[in-house]
Amino acid sequence: MHKILLMVALAVSVGLLTGCQQNNVAEKIDVEGEVTLIDDEKQLLYIDGNPIMVENPEEFKVGQQVTAELIDTNPDKDWDPEQIVVENIEFNK
Image (cartoon, rainbow, N blue to C red; front, side, top):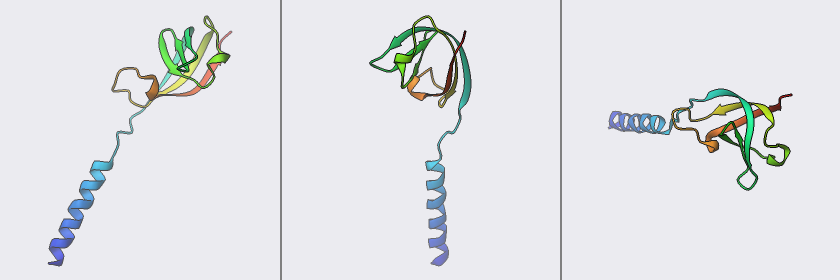
């Protein structure tokens, strides 16, 4: 009886562990280009047409050259600004 309970507990534990694992794939991206659009309401900054979410869109101007260090937390999917983590943005001269 104890062996059966132990086997059931082990099977449940393995099932929970494998079911709770997440895909931890992330991809670092460096984007260099021109700020082409700023959406203050949605807090989106477009660099050469690619949107990223920023906390301070008012600090940017259309036409500025920038370099952004980004992490795409879901690189298997299409570009999604909600899945992009901004590590750093520098203004180019």
